[in-house]
Length: 200
Image (cartoon, rainbow, N blue to C red; front, side):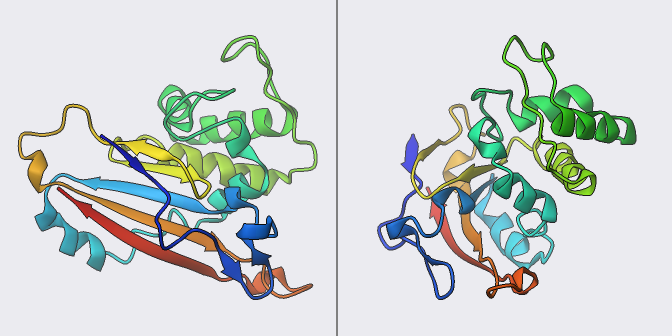
């Protein structure tokens, strides 16, 4: 089954300082949807009470991924122009050597690693920001029950061959947006979010 990401009550985003997505004042690709599959609805209460569940979407790494335009060429689970973050994480593994090597590739670019399409360089990206991007990709991309989407519209596919007790499973969807703070004070940025739970 394919579910639409867009919800009838969240047709556009409004922020006092940033404006509204309806008039393209807020880039829709700065809105992130996290989709978590829980195999049993009995796990939902524990998931909701775990305060660490939003650490990934509040991470500086994800913020840099959004603002650096990484989602233009990559998605978390599927190949776009470049490989998915999941494939990158599986190939390299989450270790210090991979962190250093991939940080250099993000900044300086590369060619021939994933085919003939080159990875463009990002010379204006600070090394510590590139490291946060890579750290997030290696840490958050391999879980088959968690994925992320940029934007306010689209679809996601449920498990084609779910577990035996699939009727008891739930999808936990969290849409979030971090505003740009006050004029001249981006450090005052705040993140808002809304959650929808889909049950069979």
